[in-house]
Length: 350
Ligand SMILES: [Fe+2]
Image (cartoon, rainbow, N blue to C red):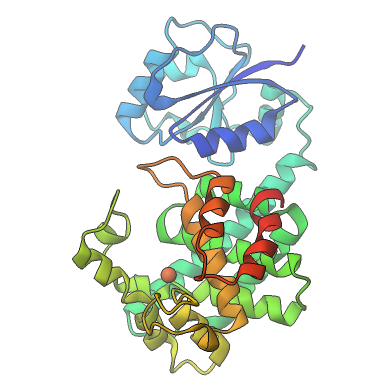
């Protein structure tokens, strides 16, 4: 009989990712932190995927694990950004009690030997490393443009190459889950777009050089957001008209930030400036018509919209990939219909 493992998280996407990792080896139950439901008494391990630096979260967790009875094992151990911890440990310590990390071997003792370090766990680490490298590259390039310095194109190229390798090796679904589990905001979005464009390019059978052009475009496409306040970028819900106008400055701003950099190709600059244009002329910043929108830009635009729809944001659960593709399919006249049809496989099955 599989060991009973209970997952508590502040996000549905994290629960989904952990379920994918743990099932069917373990009998997984799960609950959102906000629900405050008690942890089932038969749980052998509790996996917590919440921000434990927040005292309120710890207080809720303690309440969820009352009445106190020990789990079968007592090794705290991270799985990515999550931790397995014993009921006893949770109730005996104050934050930041997770500074004590046992070895991977301890984790294996906790959750059993059936998760192989050379299997799922290793894949997970590789994906996380590629995402972390990508996020570091975004951090560096956003900081550079804010300081009026040239972006490090070589570093972005290396980071994007790692993302492309990870997507090719582990699949788009694993990439999307990893990024949404570990990254937030604009960097999450850019990591998602980069992975989606790579997979879209692979599914279309594009040459390596074309896929590279796509992922470099994706890496830089939203750099213009560097100059927009986090309050607007991360605002929950609908933007006010004046805020919408500010957001719509980012493609041209990004183009201006990059246009003098000799290491950035004309195709990438074109994609940065025009990734919000629509074939019917209703996009921005230049209201281009179909005749002026290149194929790579069309691919990037579809990938960008899809990534934006399935983002995991603190204030709302992520939209399902099916729903997101439904919305894209309904954008008649704005996106190239044959490309949207080809994107179906990427959106739903890869
Ligand atoms: Fe954008």
